[in-house]
Amino acid sequence: MTSAPTAFSGPIALTPQIAWKNPVRKVIARPAERIPALDGLRGIAILMVLLRHSIAGTPTNSPVWTRVLEPLRLTWSGVDLFFVLSGFLIGGILLDARCSPRYFQTFYIRRAFRILPVYFVFMAVYLGRHLPTSSLKGAFGETSHLQLPWLSFFTFTQNFWMVTLGWFGPMTTAPTWSLAVEEQFYLTVPIIIRRLRTSTLYAVIVGVIVFTPILRAVFPRLIAHGEFACYVLMPCRADALSLGVLAALLVRNPSFRSWISTRLWLLNLLSGICFLGIAYLTYWAWDQYSPPMSTWGLSCLALFYTCILLSVVCGTSIAERLLRNPCLMRLGTVAYCTYLVHSILIQAARRVLEMHTSLSTGQNWAIGGVLGVCAAFVVASCSWRFFEKTLLAYGHKYQYWSS
Image 1 (spheres, one colour):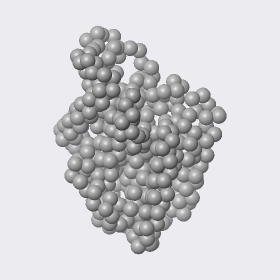
Image 2 (cartoon, rainbow, N blue to C red):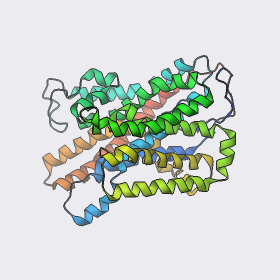
Image 3 (cartoon, rainbow, N blue to C red):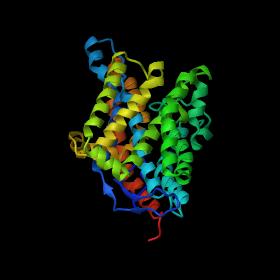
Image 4 (cartoon, rainbow, N blue to C red):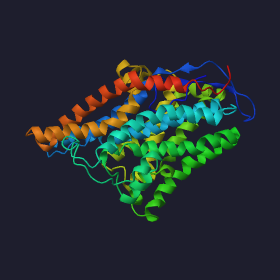
């Protein structure tokens, strides 16, 4: 049986089902069909996030440099690509194992082995700089009181506390908001997939996808910092994750897979329409908290990434071949740890350059960003080789089905 990967985890596999319409009927599945291109797609996602935090936000007064950075305005949406991939991969594993007698136990144990060890090490390093000692001052910044309760990071509720601040709090831990969104989503989706018949499941997932942008439209009028809440709270980001689950449902339907494989032009057409919307958002430089982005922009991005995902899974394409690039696939393999540590290492590199060089603000930002990204990749590669692979293998000892 295939493992339960996350959007950040190791090699990806897809297990097409033959029959699972009846939730009380045991799943019969063909051997796992590995799709290496999805490792590359995950590599694209983390590359977008790294570009956003290292180069794309570089402060500059240069008209030329401003033009160069314009196409990178939406690189923050790499997180949305992670959401779609996560919904597709984990939703697919849950669909394949929905009748397992160890369904919940195996899913949550495997996910704990994948997510928690690296996360807890990262949080220990972060919380260490807030200890009442001066030994950690300097490159990692001054010690200070915690802006968010420490317990929120260990219960994956920091995104709710971020809303009360109206911001991410310490930028070192800012990336963890998306982990909180995913963990909250996977508290409910396993139950829904387990309990609902397939026809009802389709209706519920489509309903969530349609309702979510409506929720984002009204949220700013309901609570303080509503625009920010639309970006970091799980109910407001459920459309991207649900689109991934919907894609997992569709590719496990032999009729759909056969139908779409001969009509890939439809996916290309829909991708093109979404891309026009993305170009429009880029041109007007709307950020992720603006009303156009909250109402329809986030859904447009998620739908675009879902179309790319389906085109890779359901048919041979130029994109599929490009995504098999070994560098992209390697970057995708170590994406989880890279995502966690890149922010703290980028900030540390910028602080060191600020203390020991006379670079301009823009130069310090860009050079420090690149150095921090390189350091993050080295740390993540070591973590994967000496730490994460072993834990992942241990987690896989827990099986959905008896051998």
